Structures are given as C-alpha cells and as structure tokens.
View 1 (cartoon, rainbow, N blue to C red):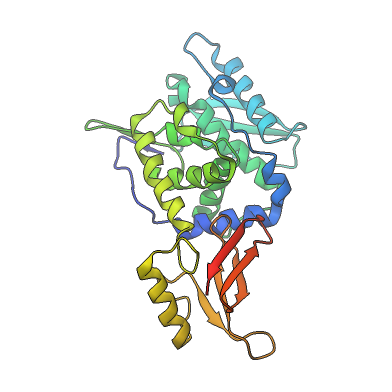
View 2 (tube, rainbow, N blue to C red; view 1 turned 30 degrees about the vertical axis):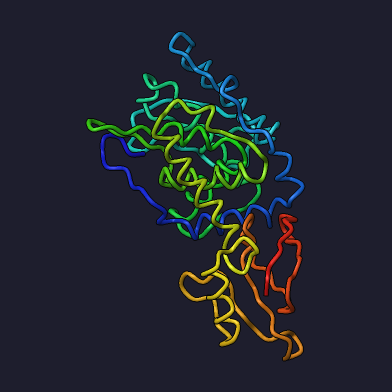
Length: 294
C-alpha cells in the first residue's frame, strides 16, 4: 500500500499478470469463470461513516465471501496498527482471521477493497493455486481479484494528487486497468461507471487500450499492414518468439508442415495451428475463436 509515497505506474508486471490469467483458466475452467460474469456492485460493499465499524466490516466480508462462492468460510475482521494494508491467516478453515490496518477506521470507503484482496487469498488457498515467490503470488491475487469481479474496488482506492497518494495492491493502476479491460471485453461489462476516483478512470482507460491491442497482434486478422509484413518476413525465415514477437514458427509433429504458435488474446494460452492460409481456431481454455492470416 502506497500512502503518501510515490505510486509506480506503467506495466512492469504484465507478463506475470498474463500468466496469472492463464493459470485461472487452467485451474477454474471456462465454465467456472463464466459464473463470475457479474461484478460486485457498489451497493453490496457500501460503507458510510455512520455504520458500526466492526458490524459493517463483517457485512462487507460476508458479501465478498458470497461473491467468491465460499459459503462455508467465515471471515473474522479486526483492526490493528501495522505496516501493510491488511493480512489474512490462512488455515484449514472454516474460520479465517483478517487484520486490517488501523487507518481503515477512518478510511472506511476502502475497507471493501482491502477485504476483496485478502478474501481472494482464502479462495486461492482453497484452490491450492499459487505462484512461487511472494511478489508473484501477490500479483496473482490482485489479478484473480480483478478478473473475477471485485478488483475494481482496488483500482478505485487509487488516489493521487500533489500532496498525497494512496494505492492498494501490488499491481500498478494501469495494470489494474488492463485486467479490468480484459474482463470487460470478455463479459461486456463497463466498470468505469462505479469509479469515484478520477485517477482510477484514467488508469482504466489506459489499461483497456492495452487489452484491446492484445487482439490486434500478428498473425491475427486485426493486425495492421506493418504487422503483416513482419509476420510474412518471419515466416519466410522461420522466426521465433523473441522480444516483442508474440508468435513462433516450428515444424509439425511429423517433422514437416510448418506451424505457427501465438498467444490467445483472452487467456494468453499459446495456440499452435498449421501455416496454410487463413486459419480459424478455438482456444481450448477460454473458447475464444481466433482467426489468423498465415
């Protein structure tokens, strides 16, 4: 949590974010992810200053447990002085103890964002889905929270001006916007109507633009003239997926028949298809239908 310090911007964790989306599809399946087509709505996690602190926090936690479909999980929320925004004790359950930073006693509008991240830790713990390394695992948690419909709260908690700044989570604002953009393209949902932070809206627009470009990478049909020229050149010379190149060429399983592989624009699972003119393929993970000119 940045609180008064500089906020990191840009897309430094983008490859880990994409790997996290792939991992979600592999572990949950397309059908399960489709059950999260509706995000948490503001009314479910609203928290005003007149609400009782502890009862309100427990109410918001119950709503997030319901959204994540963890009906047998009981979240016990407490507050204490600490460095981080929040912490959760991962046990066998069914009770899980979440500690929130004391600053949330007076910044109640962001309690939902902090709880969304911590309860996602419980969800991933039960799935036995984790990345090696603390930072990578936190990026997985932020990505899963956002892609499964509660992460707009984390982006909306981002506020920055000349005098102070605040950001929850490990992703940059633009990376949160990117994952929200990926989700919006899959479910046709516009989370920007829920933002109370102008900076969050700007970050979402930037991230959405990058998410849209994922579907315009060669050899997809939406690629521009320059991308098609580079693709044709690499095909002639048997190019591989080097830096900035989303596709790779290889011989077929019988030693012949050139094939091309490229990442699915939705889940980033790599797909291999024969090089034989226009190809229409369906991603085995997210069922996205892809067309490519080869």
